[in-house]
Amino acid sequence: MISQRIVLPFVALIIAISGFSAWAGGVKHVGGSVNVGVDFPLDFSYHNGDNKMSVMASLDVRVYLKSLPVDVGGYLSFWAVGRRFPEPGYNPDAEGNLPSVVNFNQSNNSFTLGALSHWYFRPDRKVNPFAGLGVGVSVYNTPHDFYPSEGCTVSFSPRVGVELWKHLRVGIQTQLMRRGYNSMAFTIGASF
Image (cartoon, rainbow, N blue to C red; front, side, top):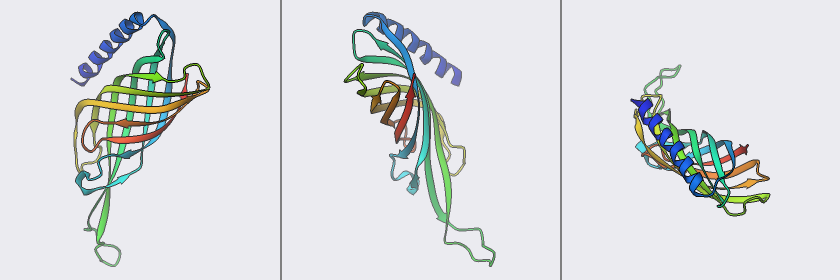
């Protein structure tokens, strides 16, 4: 069931990239990037929990077009959205006293496979700002059972940043998909 949800969009992505590249006048070159970042939840009142800094990682493969300052491609990403839930204490300490609050940590995780595109404002320069959008299929779950959820949904990933010397990417990226999983990340990546 999950495999069809991932394989079919991936095949459609390959067909779309091929058709768009031919329509836009050909391919300048093929590249990509490996990105890592720290993310922060955007849902501030999720089950009255506290937000925690977490991590994200992604792999992008892109086709740069000859006639436009645009790339199109695909991406695979992992996002961990951290939460801390304070609950009344129930485990006594060494003297038999109950603590007033116990914190339970939870990570809302998602894996996304999607299509993306970027517009470059100063192509072929050392400092090249860009803006882009990714649209994908996300499989999400919580590995801990405090507030469990799991499933599959569509996600959107707007992003802005700058590519330096064609090999270093620094940016801000968001993942918008479902309450409890929405987040924003500060990323750094290596382009190839």
